[in-house]
Image (cartoon, rainbow, N blue to C red):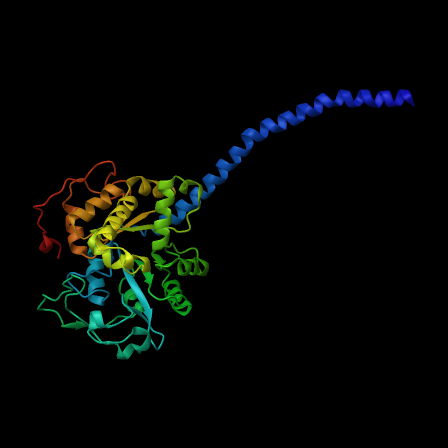
Length: 372
C-alpha cells in the first residue's frame, strides 16, 4: 500500500509540469486571442454602422430645409417643387389634423404662416387656412413674386411623397404621436422609401427618438438636441470613444448666436441668465459642436454629419471647415449656384477637404437666372 501511495505521488509530480505548461499556453493564447476576437467584433460592428450610414446619407449633399423659404412659402408644394429641382433631398415636418390626416406644417399653431388663430390638431384638413406669401422669420417666402398665386394650401404628406418619387426625404415629427408614426411609416413603406434607403426620420426629444427606433430601427435617425449636447461634451471629455452612439446621423446647426437666442430661451433655466452671458454660452457651445475633430470622429464611426442653417457663404464655410457630410439650406437655388461656382468641387463624400480653410468671397453675386 505504501508502494502504491508512493507511485501515485510520483505520477502527480510528473504530471504537474505538463499541467502548468498547458495552463501557461492557454494564458499566452488568451493574451492574443481575446484582443483578436475584440478586433473582429469591432470590425463587424463598424461595417454594420457603415452600412446603416450609407443609407442614412440619402446620397445627398444638398438638402432643402422645409423645401426652401426664400422664393416660396415654406412646406408647400411650390417650395418642394423648387427645392427638388436644386437639391438632392427634402426636409419636412409632419402633424396630424383633427380628422387624422398627415399634413406638412412646421408650427402646430396656424397663425405665423396663415394669419389665422388655431391649432392643426383641432382643425379638420378641409378647414385648414391657406399659407400666405408673406415674410416670416426673416424670409421673404415669395412675397415679392407677382406672377404667383397669393396663397398656397397646406399639403398632405402623401402628396409631397408622390410628387417627388426620386428625392430623398428627412421627416421631422413635430408631435409625439404613435398614431402619426404608424401612418407615416405605412406611407413610406408603400412607396418603398424605407427599403430604398431614401428616408431619414427624427424628433427633437430623446424619448420620442427612442420610440422611433423601437418602431423601426432600419430607418436612420438624426440625433436629438440633448444627444448633440451629450455627445459633444463626452467627446471633449475624452470618453465618447468608449460609448455607443444611439443615433445614425449627427445633426448640428451653424449660424449667428443671436439667431439661436430664441431657441435657447425655450430652456427654462435660461430665463434667469442675462442675455449677454447667454450669448457667450451659445457661442461657446457653437465652438464645441463645430469642432472639426468631433465631425471627423463621427465619420470614422460611420455616422454622417448633417449641418443645418447653411444659408450664406459664412455658414457654408463653417460647414466646410467642420467637415460636414451634407448641408440643409433654406435657399436651395443659392446653395446650388454657390457650390457650382466653387472650383474645388466636392470630393470624398465631404463638401470639401476639412483641413483647408475656405477663402471668403464677399463680392460674390448670385447667378440665379442661369439655373432657373
